[in-house]
Image (cartoon, rainbow, N blue to C red; front, side, top):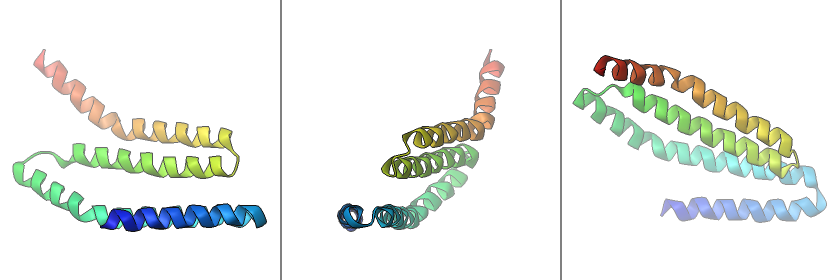
Amino acid sequence: MEIFKILAVCLITAVLALVLRQYKGEYALAVALAGGAAVTAYIIMGIIPPIEYIKARLDGYGIKAEYFTVAFKALGIGYVTGFIADACRDSGQTSLAAKAELAGKCAILIISLPLISSVLETAVSLL
């Protein structure tokens, strides 16, 4: 199963970073970032076909794909923000991690504004 490959890479990366941290701390962060980026890229490549399938089904049913797109953009922003915030925490920059999380939350709010507006218009038209 693919999940075991991903978890194995995560575990190997964590152990390697832990060992490197004792000798060369700057390399430990680089290894952790590289491992995290590799796992993230692998996951993204694996999730693209199901996303395309769902988009095709939505188009077939005549449902607007913009709602689906906003949800996946928000999900992507959340994952990238979490990855960057964790990297900041690993390097001891907790304040910077909090700022990265705030930026991610604001970005999600901004991309969801058209969706919120559409929902409000629908609610007002029902009244």
